[in-house]
Length: 249
Image 1 (cartoon, helix red, strand yellow):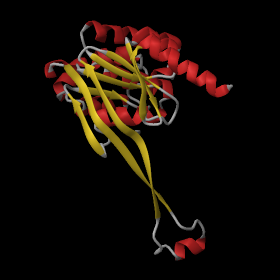
Image 2 (cartoon, rainbow, N blue to C red):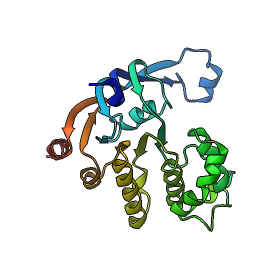
Image 3 (cartoon, one colour):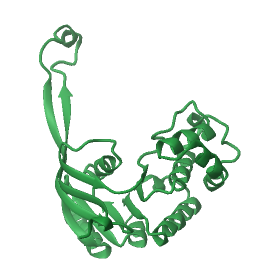
């Protein structure tokens, strides 16, 4: 594949987390805190290899704890790989979790500027797009309030509005669309369709298989940190659903 057509490429990508366990959980334990901690290694992703072309919309599916959010976090450079490589070509706009990147004591407008600059815009560019961002988020009445007063749905609106107005080449979405009301969800899906028409790359996590079918042309099924299936959406979704049904029997 031509390197100029690649948006994201993982090569033998592995991510481990170290979990420290205290030897005691009592007052005596505090007094004996000089004892060595027990360190456990948890492998979240194991030897992943895949390539996503520019302009593709790919869904990551799998059970909770399968490594989907960790993979998005590595692509967004929140985490570093333990081994292997991740190659990302283009500006990334991550929408990974509610409230991520927002300062709770800053107002909605202040957080728009804060996040816009972090995502690569100048303050002038953020100011020019501010009316469209606020209008899309439908938060005109609350935009001057601290975001700690926002509901989860309002946080999702603000986060998606900012991420969708920074001219990113790659949009990462981690399940947050499930929080909003049905009408705003549809508005977000229409924005995603616009991204697709503009040839941008979209990678998103969802447990809603109907949304996966509606939006993605390709699905990657992660299972315990490994790729169980990668291919045409309907084929992978059917394999995933059949496996979930078999586990219930």
